Image (cartoon, rainbow, N blue to C red; front, side, top):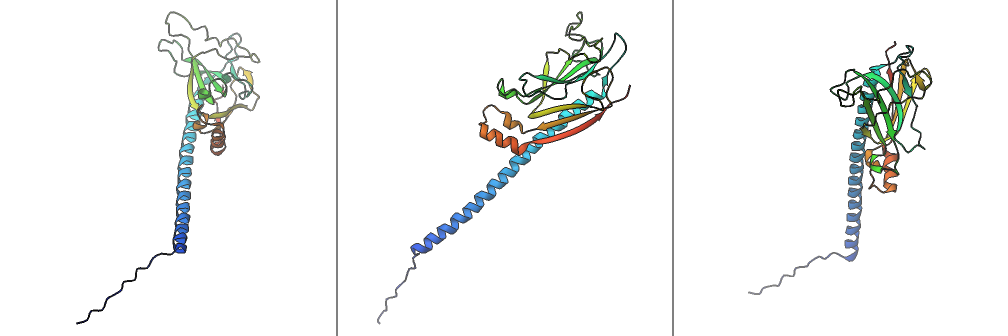
Length: 244
């Protein structure tokens, strides 16, 4: 019996086919990387917004509570002032005070005899001094006792401050409230800012916040500016005060 040899033909890809396949694969990988990059940016922006809105809520809740507990008096020789500067002067590198008043809130010291406390909010935007502490909103409280039951705190000195006098309490213990505060503005309604011995009808609070990540000292300037521009949000709240 005679056997016939069977020939097997193996089909090989041509160079053109390989190049076309590589081009299609490259395009698909590009779409995939673009999708992943977009998803990562969306997640990063969502996380940034969450931090910013949380900081705004903390600041508004605390400042609103303090303001609703504020007191003032125009009784002669026993005046109690209410002072606002309006906004932080960007040229001032210090931790400038923006609003100071007296409020019936919980005292810092357990041995305090009075619930009346000097409250001060200050804003720090000096990147040159300490970048890690720039864009901070601080709150300080001064009670009638400086931790010593036998000694009065000389900083608790708000009585007798008349309207028009430049006044701010001298508390040294500032507590960090939130960071990422690019602008902190206070406006008393309906009158102008300054020192007064009566409470305003309302206080308008304006906060411009950025992602706190943009305030870190180790972030390069181009990246910092990009984060600031992308995350900047402005919040406004009006707190109505009780009439006296």
